[in-house]
Length: 216
Image: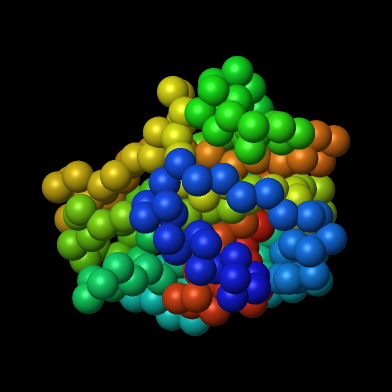
């Protein structure tokens, strides 16, 4: 993921409700969206492409090992990733459960003319505390919508939520291993370029250059 896209993603909560539309060619030039492997969720590894099977990445704690950067997963396989929020560090399990076409009318009402030529999609996923450190009251990890083959959708949504797709947040139960919550990320694609997958491209763990990509 290019530095510009990464900065946009990290400022989601600050710029909530804003919408940016970029040319597909420009976003595609950023690169880093191509999947490379298809591992099973930890702890039982399998392979579906010529890449290391999960979990075969760097160690993230006694609970498991990190899913390698560049891994491709089928929905609803789980990825295990290192996580950092301020001074807190831990290990998360992220499971994409569904990618759904969103409410076009609600999307148009919220973003007005900026929504013209774009179609909303909801990325639904579950976040689990795998490492057992206290991660309550942290922010949900962000996933980005991608098109077929992990390519850019030609649109970037910065912040915002629609009825039926609100961003979940961890509660006190997320202070120990096994705690989990569900969340949703609003994304969009240009007309004719559907959102068919989701990518995780945080810098922690080295996923910014080689994201984890989920697809159906």
